Length: 422
Image (cartoon, rainbow, N blue to C red; front, side):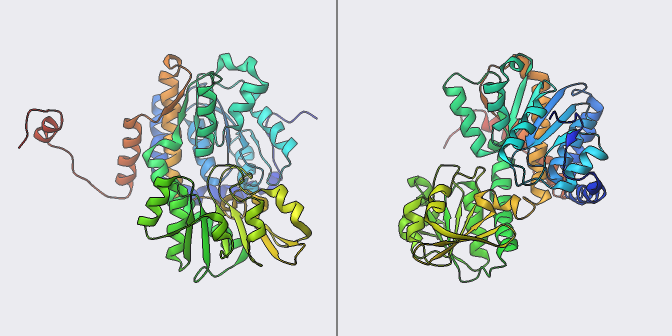
């Protein structure tokens, strides 16, 4: 059955509730509001067709509204089957006339039908969170590629996929890696993921963090944030890593570091956040003690070997929303959260609006940059131009009422010269 052009959502009657949620989020998103005014004045996005595969949350709604008010024709679909806020999706369709294809809990077939629907408007700009939109476009809709000017990517996982495409000569248009912006990964990944991951686990389980042995699998920017927040709540944090430099950093930051197989025997809560495949594998599941909680905060549900868990399971029960008990053959019980999907978005509301303000401001400025420069850029993965990154930082400080110093002309000349020394 073909989908309606206006979108595919769970319940249009949820729109009023969604509007209130969007209004509340926008209180904490002053930078995006300033950029919205700028884009409206400039008109650089007028008539530009934008398709976004993003988590459909109140913060994403603010980005979509910003682009629409800047003149873009925007269509949205979900970037994860469990991350959609159904009331926000309803508000986007009913109140803002932004076609949105997203239903919380949608199956895999529906998920890709929704991506296909978002591509039907023949986008000139793509917004992605995990690169499913870009890969679908390159694999199944190649006839549309000639119209694409460029795209943006929000996540570490998506950037890894896109760089693999570029290295293999498969990427057909330029993509700006918004995830690599300093005002994104230093704040969104660290503070946003750190707080929202623990929020999701707490909502799903109501555990007391103090005194728990928490195993953080992966110590990138997201892992740093999760480890820091868990320690702040009184947990004893163990970090596992495959990168020697990140492992050394975790040690210097005061965390225990050990192989995951060793940590599996003593951990109470396991949180994967690597962006890789089967970070928790069968051998780790077999070593975990009775009652261990397992959660994932990486983009895809591949970080925990779910097939292995299913094979080991003799009985499965859902005890609470997003909390499944797996009883194993030897009587041990392991508890999987959110079906192994993004726990912070499936069981909670994702990142706080204040931190997404910076990430989505980068997205909006990157779209405007591509509208101006994209046709002159070769197919590749690009970092966010430094001037855009710094502009987001300046606007955020201004919105917080914080002033900083600037270099004097003399100091600038000194930094640009090589003659002066001791």
